[in-house]
Image (tube, rainbow, N blue to C red; front, side, top):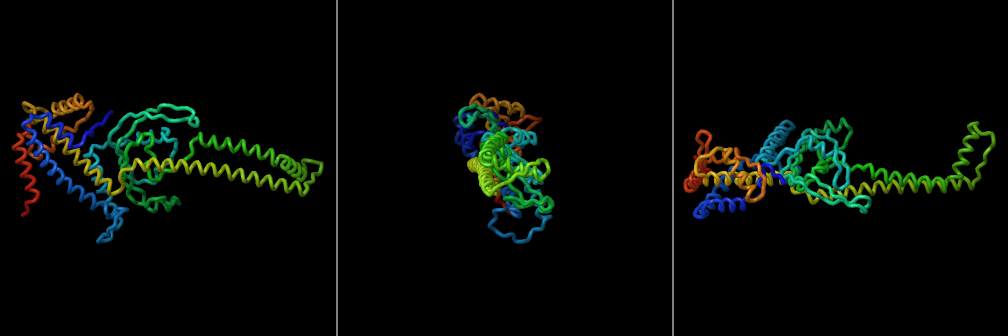
Length: 410
């Protein structure tokens, strides 16, 4: 399992692990230090959250408050651009990775795990970005041949997927003669999902439509062809032959006159009614199968959806804050335990090796971010590319002073 930059442990567990790594006499002081550090970082993220909320407000589809001043189209677009930039910043801080266009294209080409083929109209979007966090290989047993055969399928699974989509303006949809389904032109959608197979990424698009797979079309088409042939032969065979002979006589291709009695016409009408009923039945089968596919899609999304719109960036800001705290605590702990000042590369290697040996976790630790935070907070000193942590007592004093400074005015 590969987690890339994401640290797959709770903040509380990281504090516990760091305490165990330090000497026992430092446990209480480290717990106090951790509490203050969390408070300082939480306060720093408060401004970012408020800015996200203010920039999202003009186009929040779930808003239950009124805007004090009307927003024109130019101002709306400015807010959308700022929100998109801040949203990407939060996702990066929460250790999400961008899903490339190649990944999306592969998802469209691969067969869905729940046997539904979807079509996405990409031209509807002015901007679309997918993000993921946590990638693993999973195996699932699928039934084929109407449940008679089972096969093991290995696939790439994303633990978390966040999406940012902005639709084109109303003029585009008017020119295309299209009516948006379930969304407003120029609107922005943000959503968060869990446990999404890479092959099923297309189901997360808001304008995806269920399409029949070739096997489904073959099954329905074969049934319609066989059944239609039987109906034509048994119910309309004689009448059709007689009708063809009459048309041939009227067209001059047949010399012998043909007569159709009232009984022939009645038989033909009944046969056509039966054939029409059969066509309607087959069409209903097609529609019902499509409805079942749409239900399968809806059921799948219901259990994968974690949050929508404003709730997404609230969740992600909390996740980014957690990652910042975990990274800072780990870097400070390993520097505190080091006998001398060390380089960022040495620190990075020690942390990653420790995770691998003690937790069997392969991690790409964000060493630069962690050291940058600690240096700004004056908890780590840097000299000619070497880093050394200040002692716990001094670290607590400096954090206390910074915390007090947040509430000092004038």
